[in-house]
Length: 248
Image 1 (cartoon, helix red, strand yellow):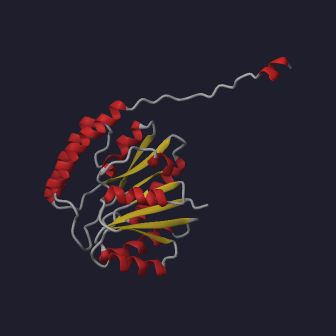
Image 2 (cartoon, rainbow, N blue to C red):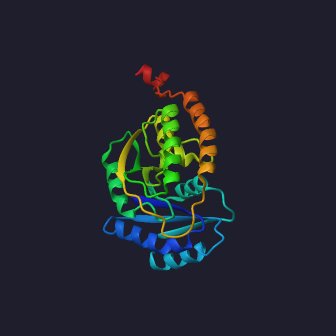
Image 3 (tube, rainbow, N blue to C red):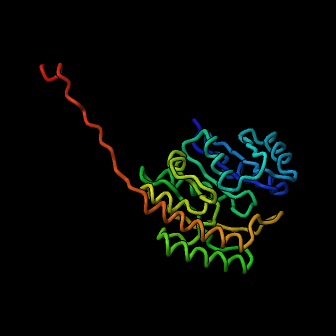
């Protein structure tokens, strides 16, 4: 049985495919039974061709494709559904998340006990533009104040989690930005790990700062509603005494 599936959402990242897959394979070398699932989210450049070329060299790479772009959360969700392992790790397809950090997140998840559902990476030093960093700080501050998730950086794509716990979460567009709050909502523990960050090698970001802000505000209220409406109640099975057993 596979031990971990690494899911990578990708849209128009043709120049980043080969170096990223090679780095992941190097980071996972020596670890048993892993696979990579790259989800091509409706790319219109050479991402599909680059992925097929990478799969010819890395047998553990599987490719999923959306006929048209459905967004990062949809790509991650599709990859997790297709995963063959009970543990899943994710990272962005733009190469900004260092694959060398994957083993630390996976080791933390394995050692964390049965109540640990998610290990989330937090970028220790951001390599984005000043404007993007400022917008991110404001958005994270508002989110943390409203949701109380205790996380300063939910935009980091490096995460490791239990597949079954993830699939039990309510699915919605942009849910990937709120995984710590959603895992806590379902009664799981969340561990935070500082990770690296790198400048984008090639290609362009799929979001503007304004898009992030507008979507983030709307979704925060939606997640707050989900948290307040969640009621956990453990069902305990009772063993009925049957007449034949009582007579004995």
